Image (cartoon, rainbow over all chains, first blue to last red; front, side, top):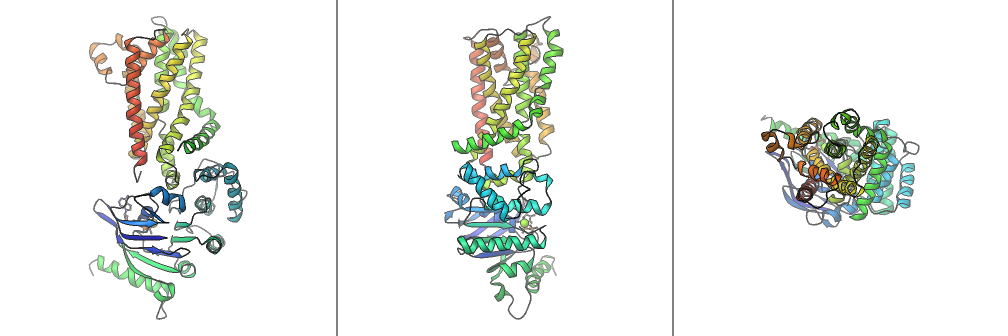
Length: 245
Length: 241
Ligand SMILES: Nc1ncnc2c1ncn2[C@@H]1O[C@H](COP(=O)(O)OP(=O)(O)OP(=O)(O)O)[C@@H](O)[C@H]1O
Ligand SMILES: [Mg+2]
């Protein structure tokens, strides 16, 4: 579902992503972990066609990222780290527009909007503009925007930041159900390691733009360590190296 | 592409029409000039000379700041969300620009109605032709405005554009025809692309259709439109705008 080779992005003299090779199989839930500034969002923005890689290549959802970005866009959903809810527009209309931009008819888009709002426990809030919602409610609307067209591959950049425990659990139930029903593939970042541990089939840890560890949660934790130990061990060491110790 | 443009256009128009006050407010300045400066101007000139100037002023102010909408969409992440959909980038631009055209049509019609009430007596054919010219010009300017909004720092957009528009309005000869200006100012005003359509508009409002001034105005407008729409599409196409 995702296969990248040597994906790299530099901003001036900052190398944000330094040649990563990523794979995700259909139906897999892959966690992409790393400290702040490691290159997670930059990688996602490349994979979602928003940022042109400096070098490297990728096939995403069956389409070549550089040769056929539109083919990629048709089949993916993306929840960005910063969110994408308009502050002043009533959200139902925005959701229906979003569906229509994926080729859905008006009726169909409206029906899917209704169903999805119910499923994400947002019914009753859809006539409000984004500015009249709480942070967690807005986040759930972000997720609704990304799911409306039933993507085969979903990118989630810290989707649960700001969600209360119940909404988090609800979101993960929903994601698991979509995987079970439709074989949805999910590529997500999170700073909640317990969440990654419980939800993901496989984890990638990135630091300074490089993949520094990869494996199933169980394999990474071998030897009775917690995921926090593993994470600190891997990224903490490289942070000390950077400081010249 | 056409369907996407249409879907975005209709959505945008609905949003715009919800803010009726905004549309009228955009036309308030030229309307004030019409009512409070027009009676003064017509002691030395005609309504048919003044009103085209005010229409150009309206177009420049209203469409020059069109990019403001996209500044908000950029900072709220909405634009990025739209850029992940399969919609063509040209449709993202055209949907917006056509929506701006509707705003401009309503504003220009308001201004013309008020001008007729005050004493403008331009022939219908001339006014219609002028309308077309102003629409093409306004839409192109809106496209250029979006390009600027997506390029410069978002906090700079409003001050930069509102400052840039003033000299363009003045140099186009919007208030008084440039033929009345001292030589250096007249020469300088030839640098403003809006001078030519404005002079064409004045001819059209006087019922003169086939002359060099009109032809030049149309030609400059077409070139301006081609350049602006090309630049606008380029910028919307840019991978990381
Ligand atoms: N537009 C940009 N210009 C310059 N540097 C950038 C730009 N975008 C990101 N960077 C840099 O690239 C690096 C990776 O950033 P990125 O946003 O991918 O990190 P991240 O892993 O998502 O971090 P976080 O957990 O804080 O979200 C950082 O050092 C960041 O400062
Ligand atoms: Mg990030």
